[in-house]
Length: 508
Image (cartoon, rainbow, N blue to C red; front, side, top):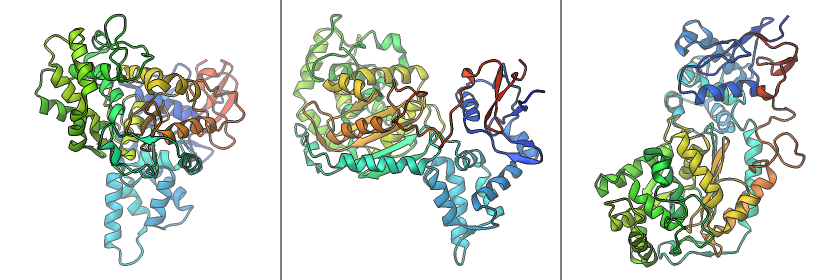
């Protein structure tokens, strides 16, 4: 007798298995593997060779009554069997999973709650009827949240650790606020903020995370990703290399093929600026870039500092020298306007974000180009892969090799004090504090990243199976992750009960 029950997954990635009269929760890890496969698949789901899948459309699920039963089950899970709970209790429970009220996916839910609060004479309460209204368009997201199916299941413990790392880094007092661009010199050295966003849209911020600041060099990987998305790898790398330069980011220096070494140095970024929408007018080109960045940030704050832009132009002699050197060496595409490319580059460096909005941009890169809070694809997988590769090898100025060795994650820094950090397939972070070291990296940001990897097994080469001293926030307490590909033919994974069953696989 096969121990593996038939696996039933809706296209919404929820498994409900009735066994011995009880409704069992899906297993967190096996279900997550299938959920990831379904999320990234561009076509209709295909059958796993070892498992029988039934994948009805969501409308079919609700017509058969599974949806309402699922809502009821989730409601009583949240209320712990009570018929009513206060709206504030529900919102607090939701936030403990990592979701925030401003999440676009929760817009309908929040509107229903706001209406209930306005219509209530006293303390607003949520009963089963109100919950069904709130969950009507969010049942999948809410189920994943409250059944701890997100990439970070114990989010409250995780952010408690993040807060400790934040306060540890706050004590770092070294570095100086960059002053070669006058507008940057106006920021207080005491400002310090960290925001994170996971690939499931779980979010946390601590410190000065709503203060706008300019991306500066953190725009370089985002600009490069868009160029690859538009034109492809082959065309873009006709004009720019892929190797670390070994010299300062603003040096007049090309590789042996008379190309900029990589897109993360000024020369490379200026050339990339000439490749984006070369056929359109300047204003349209800038609007196009702003729209792209807002989609990366899920619609959250992306602004522009005209004062910084003017300051960049007035003090940009080195960049003008680089531009003319590139023109002399014929580094630009035929017909490109060097002055226009420089102007666009200065504009891009002057684009403003907050830690909160930039963390979503980083999470979009961590999520393979799909914005976690809108579920919309912004970049191709090719663009993301190339971008993360170059961030890993070239993203931290003259400290790139040290950072790759000690932290082992793709990152990009800027002289504004920003550090854009990507933990692939898990989350994105933005760390910001204006004091920078001699090579232009945020002192507090570097310290935070190093401590993050010391505490969690996020380093690219940390072994996920054999480690003793590091935490894995992807695991629930006492739970061993199971990878289907690692199971031998004589055992299987029972999704409904989240356990390995020794015996023949279904269909085996």
